[in-house]
Length: 592
Ligand SMILES: [Ca+2]
Ligand SMILES: [Ca+2]
Image (cartoon, rainbow, N blue to C red; front, side):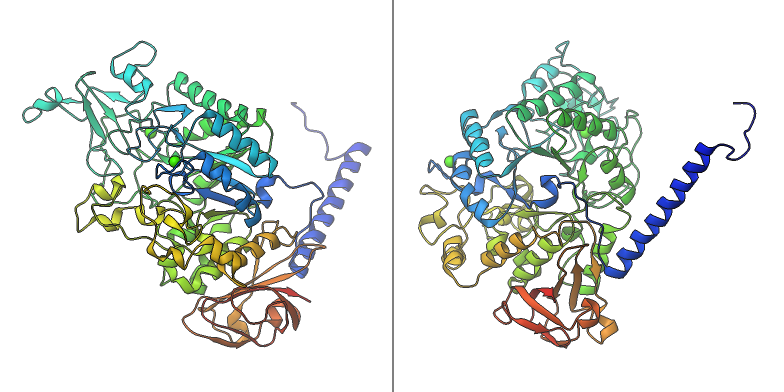
């Protein structure tokens, strides 16, 4: 329009303004209410399952062996679904179960739509899904889109220049080399890009007479995600499993999806010792923005099967800006802050900063927290066994979706394996004095079910031996005990169904304001409108915390302990003006 109208001449316009003013007043009221009552407006809409469920990660090799070949399998998992249901988790995420030569234990997929015989067959998978549905458990699969195994049929044909497959991977002729390149056709890699596992990311193929790019092992060639056919193939994989009834996917290694098309550019500042989980400056090989369109495409596929399908993205070392783009593209980026930034020297104040930073700027985006996984030492080893309950309490009472790693509910420990016993390539890439720093076997030891042979994991010889502590630490013993890590976990899982916990905000209690030590005590309130109000308090210090006054933060002098990681106070009224906590003790208190 060329001519400007005078500001608001019509009745319709006045009406719009009135509505806008009313809406603004209403918004101010809601904000005030939130500030005053530490509570959020509750939606009447039922929440999607992933907002109310704990996700439980199973490492299938190590969970339950059903046929005594020493390796966990799908039938084994199916046998234990009752346990998971009793535990109170809502979803299980299975690390890869697809056909694989297992150089990287399934993260090297030979065929995305086949179950590896080690884990069973398709009928076993279908039975598992069906049984999980009966028990109201969701199943999430691992999706490895960045690379396949070099034994994949796609790679076989790509290496041979087949018309359809020749551009399925990232091939390059490299640069002519004056000397010392006899094994690589007289050529050298096109640039200095490094593999995550060390050394050049380019591997010469004598068959194709070209180099191929591999961000990880050289047996894991990167797919060429710029190829539309590859994009379609991956979407077809998602559809295949969605049709089988899965509830979502955990997408692996997304920051590596795209590489710069300008392969003659070197990356600057590379060293052999960089770590890929840090927010580093690999601008040519990580975090390229093309990944967002791929994610949007996957989200569209998932939505065809229901809006509540879950898509969580592995996302080590990304900025908040990139995190938000993952959200915008229809996925939830895994939040690894509790893994990356918490350590023994991170006190309660530091933990609070880490949590607040994670929640910072999320707005309506749904938070999530992860405390452990198949790539990191167990909680008992990272922070000390006396803190197991407090850490499970933290994970299960923070806002958002928690992901628990198998065995953490009973406080399993890392297991020592000699160099000869080591199976993980990441460890075997190093020598006998260095392997322990790199091997991920210790956190992958078999689940400890009971005090019988091999902890009830297998009647055969386990692929990794069980931890020697299994007679003390096992599910059966913890079920029988009056109080155990397992029982604390169960109580927390049940409690977090309460509306006080199923929203995305948290109010920290300022301990130093009331003369307490905020380097020792971490405390926060969880509540929303019309819900009960809970105070969560944990002692992460190295000694007793005596007579901490939590009444001001809680807005009351009285509370009732509903979960207690130690023996005192259980189901008892408590004077919030004087709370005493031993090292590692955590309490959830219903404020009265
Ligand atoms: Ca087996
Ligand atoms: Ca890639």
